[in-house]
Length: 277
DNA sequence: GTAGTCAACTAGAAGG
DNA sequence: CCTTCTAGTTGACTAC
Image (cartoon, rainbow, N blue to C red; front, side, top):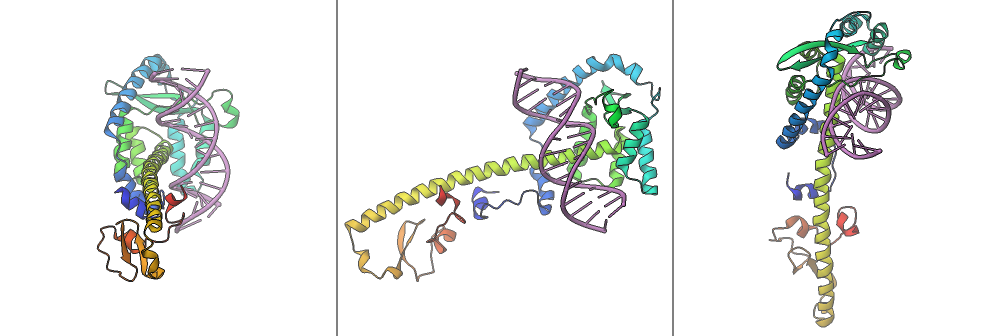
């Protein structure tokens, strides 16, 4: 989008309006450089994570132990809940209160390892005992989610189920990932829009300065040569963009700046923000 | 120590 | 009423 287009829209940015959602996906393909950096960081992170927690995996992989399978339980209960009409949220709470275990996977050299860890989804009374731990999605999980997000920024229940199965995540985790991803996308778009507005503002400020200067010049010209004063005021107007004097009755302007030239003479801070600068 | 990132959470609105 | 969404927040973790 050209800067001039932004400016000509009256600077009105309907951020994240529904009709923009589709466009967002195209606008916000991850910056390759940033993506590289992120990958690098994630690799580092993964390596460290593996080193840090690998020793825990065997004991954590044991599954139900004293806690049963919260993930499966939650998912199964979620499925059942759809039938019975019970809220998923409550089901997760119930599942979590039954067992403080959730699963995540960590890949090591392409090998997917299923682990169980202390759940981040605790009931209030459990929270004190074991505070939530940070779950990091693996590179593969993130990649699959990203791919899916590129196709659809929102999830259908079926897609959610499919992804959760494919990635060994709870449907809720997939859902949350998409929510956060949309939020990040929107934030990024807002930043881009802010930059555009900033540039637009700078341009308009410059234009305003130029016009002020021009006005001063014209005033001094008027004092020096009062020729124009002798003509009826209503017949003369100054076109601020093409820097020439023209007749107000003559609508056939040939200036390339037709927008400015056709409605040039009334500036206010509403439709010309720079005038307020 | 602190700023940044991100998964997970909550509250409230919208839509069915 | 339930589900799903956004906006804002929290807390774990990392990099500097």
